[in-house]
Length: 355
Image 1 (cartoon, rainbow, N blue to C red):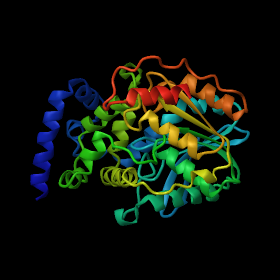
Image 2 (image 1 turned 90 degrees about the vertical axis):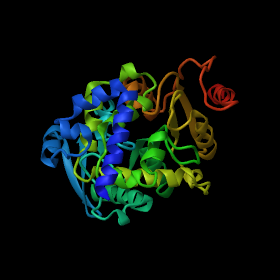
Image 3 (image 1 turned 45 degrees about the vertical axis):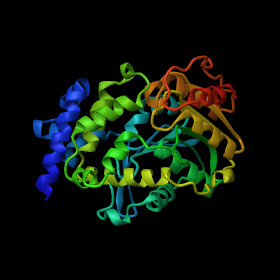
Image 4 (image 1 turned 120 degrees about the vertical axis):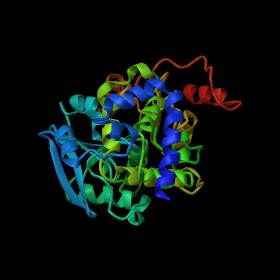
């Protein structure tokens, strides 16, 4: 049966390759071998650790995981939490600036980077993610902090700020997930019956490179170091199953209209959003802004799902100004929106920008 699944996946891989030649090239360049480029092989953990750790790397044992994190600089603490299929290096440009005045802690979220996931996927769920993050901060003895989180990391950060409102000074959320929405194509694809089973054994890096191109507003801004990292981390031993599991968690979260605790957040909150985000529509910034009492929204024209990676200089300067209690000058409002998938979406987005 596994052989049949693999044959199906290889056919899909070939079909995707025909339709995405540049993405195929990026996948081939990032892969250490031809077998890796097909998505069958792992990159040994020791090789990944050699490349993606440095003198600031530390490890914390939490809920059976050896969490990889980095700590740089001195001053008030800010914790950086990355999103799905990413790792702490997504914040590298922010860390360079923030560490001049802050103690900056970034971590590989469970399921990703060098941290990995628990051995049993049955134990890996939303509650485990949130509990592990909270315990991580306790174990490394961070009592008071600001937090910045992107995508899934934004959801984790917002939940923590809701549950521990007196421990969070300021909160920065970049294109966070939480509210009901249509999920991105890769999540629908990867969590489909049969495909999800195949994906636990083989994941062509072409899927990763196609996704990176989708989450950037401007493909020209994608740096080789980031593209390579996304591919490499997807080939960490155990990553295939944990990626599928996280996508299932996000799909379930995106389908639920359940009460969320964000009204409990006391920290002043900055919502940063890429106007061209194809993963989490900019219209959802309005719901966050309504639910978090002391919040403001800054929308970046032409930017996708990861503003801190796509336009690091602008976003980190805005983040520092916000952390210092200064006014954020928003980018020039959008006057025209050309492409949206549903009627009325452009009008709703323009209203969100103008408000």
